Image (cartoon, rainbow, N blue to C red; front, side, top):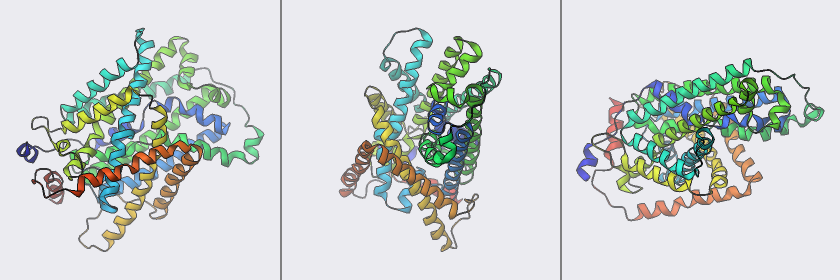
Amino acid sequence: MTHRITQARLLRRLGVRDAALIVMGGIVGSGIFMNPSVVARFVHSGSLVMLVWAIGGLVVLLGGGVFAELAARRPHDGGVYAYIKEAFHPSLAFMYGWTLLLVSQSGGAAAAAVTFAKYFAPLTGLQVKSMFVAAPVIILFTAINALGVRTGATTQNLFMILKILAIGGFIAVGLIAPHATPAAAPPNVLAGGAFAAIGLAMVPVLFAYSGWQTSSFMTAELKEPQVTLPRGMIAGVVAVVVLYLAVNAVCLRALGVDALAATSTPASAIARLAFGPVGLQIMAAVIALSTLGFLSNQILTSPRVYFQMAADGTFFKQLAWVNPKTHAPVIAIVVQGLIALLISFLPYERILNYVTCIDYIFFGLAAIALIVFRNRDARDPAAPRPTIRMPGHPVTTLLFLVVAWGVVGDVMITTPETMFGLVILISGLPVYWMFTRGRRQSPAALVPQASVERSELRR
């Protein structure tokens, strides 16, 4: 077993296009087809709806810029995990990976599978419980990704391209559908309640934009990651912002702000306006497709973090095993699939919602990490010059930090149960201690992956 771990390693087979599509796949799920109505209920004004989504787009562009420079400065395996580890402490990085495995990524994959299952029944007419559709889908995508990174990435890319086409089709449908007469904004919004309303609406918007960071997990399999990942990050984020703004503009044109706020399924409402009852079936198929694409992304990206944790000697060493034929971290992928499978059988929705704030805790830490790395590199003449730099740093970086932790504070105040997510996060500390307290200098088997890859980068 040790010999195989030493010889087999992850291969750099992905380029800029793959990185951009993975960025988009990590962001675009089913939320964009539903969240416009949530935002409209808060702000009650078409212009404010567009403003909120535009501000959210600006925030995600700031985040994309932060992560792009991080990737250019520290193209280390594991992405966010590696940034946190180097800037702060390995225990904090472990807590990040621990939460990904137990809730965030596994829960996201399970949520996508269950959502697909809920649309699968009405589409096919089959009366089956959601779990009996969700489970085979999780198993299928786990098997696909175990075949290798090229197979997994191609599958994810195909679904993302189909999602782009589907969203483009939805935008076209919205343009030809009968459109609503614009309504005047309510007096209370214009009289001074706009700022508070925008603050409330920003939370679902920023959650809808989240997910670009998962592309950084793939660093070990990207060609020239210090160049490929930053370019893919920016391209993917910009494309998503454009798509999201277009979707919201179409929703407002077709429904008007009042009807948009009144429905929980704006995409289906627009499709029904254009095509009648069959439009509901069309949108169900589109949303089902989108959830499958998101599931594919989650199972592709997140196992690379657990792989790196094991390679660093802070997690089960078996997770660092790479199949010598497929060059995929098969055990890490299977473990991810199994935990997602278990969560899909549980009433986990509330827990998943609470723990989404964990992402924003680490987004803020990533912004601080960029400041740390900039200061370190300024004192090191041998430090490489990044191909992409965050415009307006440190002001823009600090602005992103404030927004990220502002979201965390808002969620913790409005949803006290979020503390359960923090408990899961903190529970990673004793687990980290258990893995490291008795650790001896083990066979060089599990660490070379990182050292080999970094030596390649220097060349």
